[in-house]
Image 1 (cartoon, rainbow, N blue to C red):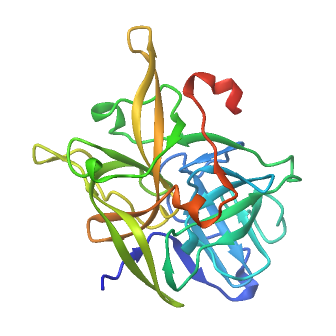
Image 2: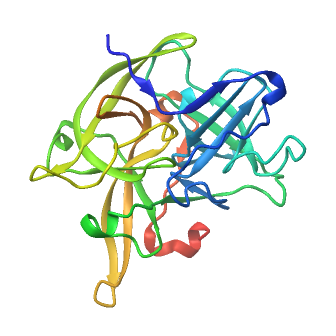
Length: 299
């Protein structure tokens, strides 16, 4: 059995430290404050005994409520809990940056079809209700060199799909957006079952996407890993040019979402299947937006 490394920044804390901020460098602007919430950006989970810094994946509706998906292993079973974006400010200001709380979570041990948790967004947040927008934040220095950047710095979520064997290998490229390494990209190597060791036991996800860093003519397109600690819960997607004007100087890209960042082994990255969130909880509806309707989507 393979043992995978989780991608959350996670600590078991004394209860007196539950509101203490853990600071770990993020990729530039992923730890900014975003309202409405969008995919890829930093979040912080705080419960009675634990704190974790992870990333947001994509927005959902469920049971007439608004929510956002992250990785299930980013959270624990303790209640009460709070989720902040980008992080909690201090114990003396516990309401600042709160976006909601965890209401659904995949199991910590045994078998599951997905590694996911749902954040119920706070309808009475301070300074106002927390809302989402179906976009993915993108930032990467090399993005303009190899894979052209969207003029707005974010891509609209056009659809959600399952990966198939036809997606395996070059030339199909998958992208990942997460708070630690920003936007990276790679190819799909396989779709199979993988297992994790965690403080509670062994947790297996079936299936997951197995992705490898993308090389082009034996030249690395970008420096560093495809993902790293804190990228858990980030979003895996394909992107395509949806709209262009002024000789290509204004570009809008769209995204098709496939996965939720789960873990790694060596240079490989693993992602749960995004649509298995719907299989796990049948009332969940992932939210999408056609890029040409930016104003209708809250941005």
